[in-house]
Image 1 (tube, rainbow, N blue to C red):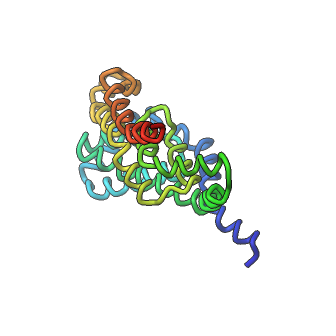
Image 2: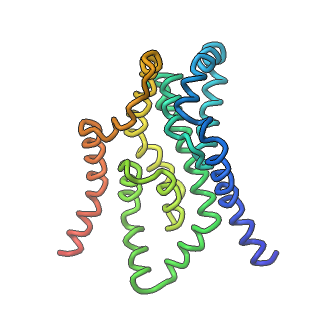
Image 3: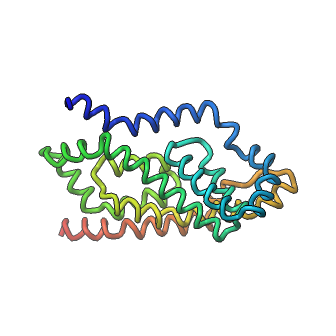
Length: 237
């Protein structure tokens, strides 16, 4: 098998993800929206009441597909998890779906570009190699901060670790635990959608940026950065 063929096979998963993401952005934007959820809420509730286990498994599978292919509607999916299943086990379903989907992107990027890029950074000299060593020494902290800080797009937090050689287990663990605070907030909003639908309003998704919510999350992010600060302080001394 030629080197070009091998490269094409490695790139195929990430190319498929990109193609599906573009198609989803064009054709599914209106179907994965708050308006669509509001219009189909009674059907969804009825099906859940009659087929709870199938609904739960189907919801997690749909969440995995949405995240793995970077389709629009991840936030709506999280709200739907709270709406259909309540804060618990809704938040657990959301976290499982998001973690599996994120791992799919990570593995696709790692196979297509990540392993080769990480190897080149390890083999390089000068500033690039030094940067790679700094990243390797602070992977846990950086991974948790990327998950905790709302400003970091979820897709970026899935892609970048693959490009710098983060091990799979670190990615999975930091994703699972790092998204818990944000998932709890959005799932709780989804759990209260019944009254929102009844009043004809839309949910306040900006709640995650309110001080009472944002400050504790930023506090966790700062705590995650503490090992880097201590390491830098000891190095400087």
